[in-house]
Length: 143
Image (cartoon, rainbow, N blue to C red; front, side, top):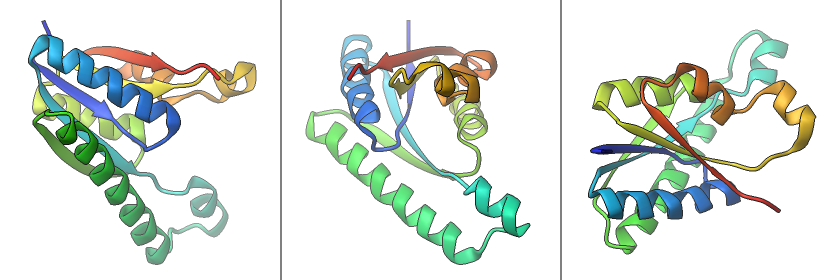
């Protein structure tokens, strides 16, 4: 079934719910589990200034590392073996890259429906459906 699971984690409420569901799937399938946090590049700053200041990138990497450590700690605290990964870039590209690299058979992400405006702009989960190299599980959190 699923031998390797890649969970994309951002520390949000939706991400925390997906983390629980990922743990349940991993427990059931006995899958090797990987957790990915992506330090995104602030697009608005890049577009406005034409470059990305190093301080902002370092701050975002530090934040993503803290989120990753929190998620890894939560999974390990529940008895799971998990490998953490930190990436810098656009989330969908980094998720797909790592999923291919490790041979993931399932990607898990969290999502909260936010109406038409959010759907129009797109979401990581929606975009992953078109680009993922494997199955995608979207853990939906309702308010």
